[in-house]
Image (cartoon, rainbow over all chains, first blue to last red; front, side, top):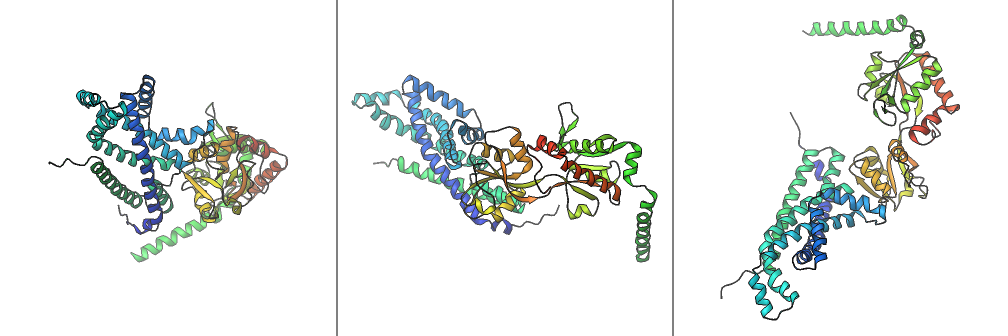
Length: 223
Length: 264
């Protein structure tokens, strides 16, 4: 077996890789922010919301967590136009990521919410705080702090899962690797470089999530 | 060693030359063999719809099979179908296991060194397809249009070179992705083979992919062994007659959903 590695063939397509990596970041930016927002609402709905919302979000979580991401994506992109909902591939990819992360983060955040001791909520009630105030200051904040590492991992998983979006012609990093490989047949080099870029993006994203965590939940300084 | 090598190559080339000069004398034309045997043996595809694939009763059906039936009928002989793959279709012919190869075979300089080709009998091309409402007749008209294509396919490579900069090319993983994108309206046009367009037409969708312009044309020809001038002439005559009397239009209509295009 003699294979002459030629990474130059792949670097000739560097603009595709850069564009792809930026689009992957853009997708996880939109998907991450909106997905976590949806997850917070879902966690509230499942733990404190009215009965119909509990049932609704329960069904949503089960549906999304028990079906493949790729199928959800195809359904949105290829399926919905049949009933008149035409989304571009970027809209479809963002929506699919928001819905997917929304379901997982609903469950992750709910775990944090339910771990809040009953007495803490009662303390809020005794201070005559409204239900929203209690949820926001006494429940959500410490809950998010507890589950922040788990949530960060899930965001990274969804970012890596966004590779599937290349299947609907979203020109993300995976698409760039596939595209380059289909032009110069340098499969090893193309995917090797794409793997490296994904690794860097994932580490970067984890650090960003850690940074956000430090800002949202500053470490308690002893007084 | 050197002398031995020289002698060996000399003797083999002499043998080859002798075989070449003797062969046409020793054999009558393949046309006489076919008539004498009252059988036409034809290599047909088994895994390439709509040209040839297994039908409901496991017998081969398709454009190429109907072409073979037409020829056998006109020659007044029994047809023997030999299912082949695209890799072994030419060896079947050169080892004389079959008389003809009707297996969506396109002419190429490499193949023409080994076998002869008839006039084309079936259209095979890559082009841009779209619904009647899209007014596109040349590559320049693609400006501002969204075209779906299967990534890495020959039409992707070719179209990427010639399409205007403002044309948006959406590349999908496989033909099914490209077809779905077209049918769901995610792209206005697709660049693909006429066979793929025929597969879409066969499902009778609301959006019909009509040919707009050709990217690469490589029509199918019948392959036969070299140095069979009478068989070649006869086959060409029958193809020409079939094009005139509408036989090939009927075959094309059935398997490709459209009449034989002009210029085939």
